Length: 368
Image (cartoon, rainbow, N blue to C red):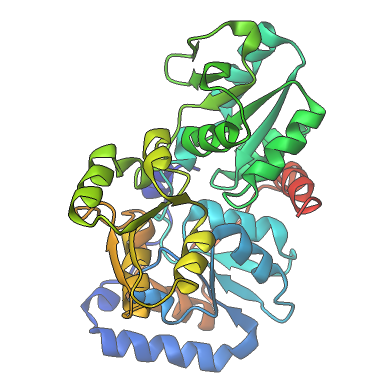
């Protein structure tokens, strides 16, 4: 289900009363349900969530980490995932059948994940098999739908995270001559480049025009990148880097590898969300940073490190709009509906899809 399908779905809409409550009443309702349900309830919260939501998370982290932590909560009956749709899907795949996963607002999707659907991927695979034969192994970023994870798992591939993409691409090349990397072209390109693969040996599959775009020779292509991107990270630009260099000559620039290749190349460091957080945590007082990632997280890092000078690499950056669908009214509504025995917004991955998707996840986790 992509973001447009979820917005059109027949799932219940939040009652008006929750939107009319002030934050103090909403917060008290959230605390009451958490107290009432205890360990039967677990709230994982992604780093990009609003402060008003992350405050009540039982664990903070990235998408896969939170799904794994959810699966380890053996007493939890209800998991209310404060993130986006594909994250809740992964949690449903990894948790027990008797554990139920909920998303406070079904409109919380991911534009990157929606840039690769199952039909497009099957068409691409058919054409790529015609061009290259059985020489390609598919890999998918965990920021993808369960259906794409299942496609990859069915064809012998694996999922990757921004933390282990390098390791997983190295593994993939022990299996096949080429890889298809879905759905984020920038993470795939940056990681492959760091492994010494020439940009000329990379191609981009355009799912809209159903064509392979490349500049070198077809036979030399090693990495096929899906034409997808993160709508947040793609908005960091070379101009942003130059502006920071001009204004703050001593400032270090650290960005997420979902940023464009040219931005990563000009930065001082690039890495996963956890890498960014830990790097700044370990930095000495008085150090200065321009951070190229989602704005809710950047603002939280600024608040947590007042002894450092920290700014966003793009001062006009907005938070992730779909991630921000999860707010305090929706969280309170979700928790109270569960406590009252009439839960809303259940995330339930089709069993056959879940089996193949778990193969892709397990291949990665086996190499963790």
